[in-house]
Structure formats: structure tokens, C-alpha cells
Length: 250
Ligand SMILES: [Zn+2]
Image (cartoon, rainbow, N blue to C red):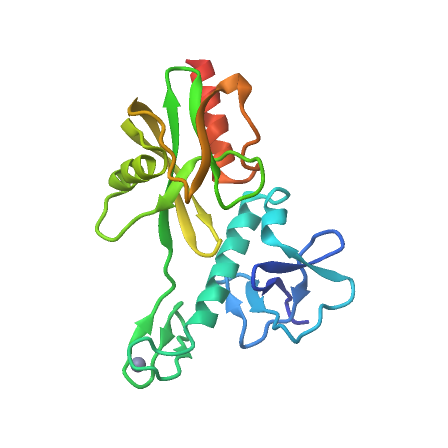
């Protein structure tokens, strides 16, 4: 009997799951992307014109994150990013020839000029800014209609260190300077292909001044009077919880 593979089957950012939100098990096809070497987990595209099999549904992965284990989240994150990378690199960015998939590595190879295109992640810093022992800065995005307040985050620019990116984003978005910037943790974030790198920093100086195109509101909130914060499973949520717990413990 053929061994079935656990399948992350995506239509863009939506994942195919059954009524109990479980992943399907499928026979492996040549076009499937292996997610881990030597085990049976694959990623596959469900094309727009292909129908959803009976008993299955397509769910945005954002909605599944809260229900998943870390392993499932990391596998799904890897699957969706590799599929997206494969879709977006069908042609050589150097000479324009159609590419081929490398047989062993994650690489799209150009048979004409030999150029290899590898999956890339975008480094993105996210910072929890505290003031004293019981306040943290939270900001509401100008692009988001919800009432959720999150942390200051942004992409690392070319030629910049992570710490410089942390300072620049905080100054651009809310006009404050930071001190004692310390690394906390990281998390792949497949929307679409980011690596979130988490820092804790202390407020140093400056009055809050909003970058209005990006930020609708930003304030220091007391730990026991927080507004609606990002959902459980997001790195922002775990950063906020971790900092509050560690301040309580100290
Ligand atoms: Zn080429």
C-alpha cells in the first residue's frame, strides 16, 4: 500500500481542511513540494478552476493559527511560502527563460543561463516598547478598521542593522526614541513571506507624534488597562504576555 502524505493544499492563503479542520492525506504527485526531507508532508496548489472535494473547505490560515500547534503553524507557514515562491518564479528574473524546479534543493533553475532563484524571507522587526514598570506603547493601524492595538513593526531596509530598523520604525511611526533594545524571539509569518524578529525596548525620549498614513492612534497603556490586542498565536500577543509576566515577576 502506498504511504499517504499529510497535505497542505492551498489556494493562495486559504488551506484545504475537512469539517473538523483536519488536513487531508493524499497520494503524492510529482508536482508536490516536499515540506520536510524524509517524511511525508507535502504542499500542493489547488488551482482556481479546481473544485473543493466533498467534505472539505477552504479556510484562511489566519483563522487556523489560533487553533494550531506550533508544529502545524510552522509547517503551514513553510508550505504556503514555498508554494507562493514557486508560483512567482516560473521565469528567470535574469534572462526571462522558463525555469525548472531543482530536483533536490528549493531552487528554481534557469536551463538557459543557469541562474538559481531561491526562496527569500523578508526580515521584519517588531518591538514592544515599555515605559517604567507598568506601561507599554500600543498603536492602532490606519489601514485596519478594527479597534485592535498592536506593536510597532516594519521591514528592515537594505543595509540596515536590526537595531537601526527598530529605532527608525519607532521614530517614523510614533516619534519616540528608544534605549536598551534587546532581542526576544522570532517567528515566520507567512503574510506573505516575513520573518518577524521581536525586540523589547525601553522608551527613552520624545513626545508621541503619529505618522498619519500608517498610524491612527498610539498611546502608552497601563498593563491592567490594555485595549484589544493582537490575537493569540501572533508573535505580538506572546510578546505582550511575556513582558507583562516578566515585569510582574520582577
Ligand atoms: Zn536565465
